[in-house]
Image (cartoon, rainbow, N blue to C red; front, side):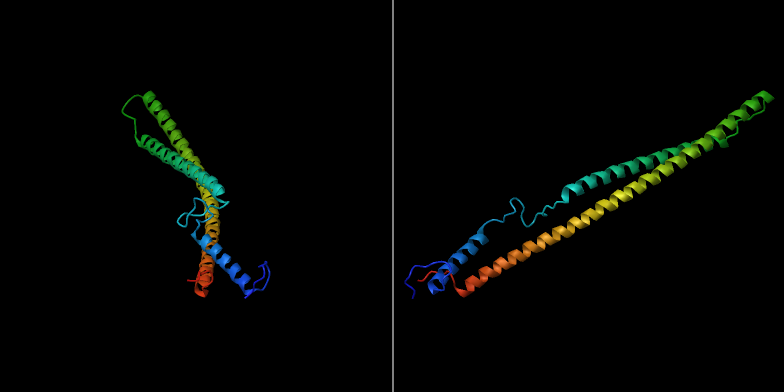
Length: 186
């Protein structure tokens, strides 16, 4: 047995046992301490640097979706106005009357046909605006979805690294426990 003073780096069996015992105590203490993640536990999704960017892109996506819904409402109202104008143009307001009344009815009918053409142009404009809004939403959605996939990949990597570190730590504890290092003599 070594009776001299134990110094770090010596090959004395007592020094090795003392260092192994302190290492085992540190391993047990680390295993019992809470994780360094603070409020994050295993059940919570780990935060990544992409989370604020994803939040911004999701707000943009929601904004584009609202714009697309508004454009869809404009198309529906323009189509309803077109249907009303067509119904008005289909009715015949001529009756047996003098020629002046017929000319007035003919002018009114011409005006109604002009309103139908204007309604058709309004429907086409609204449909074009809806297509543009749909394209903008598709772009925003695909961008947000790509960011979500990248973030999920990063989260999976973080969770795998945590799992690997925990497995390594538990293996160290099991190895130390199995070898009997750090046990007090009875």
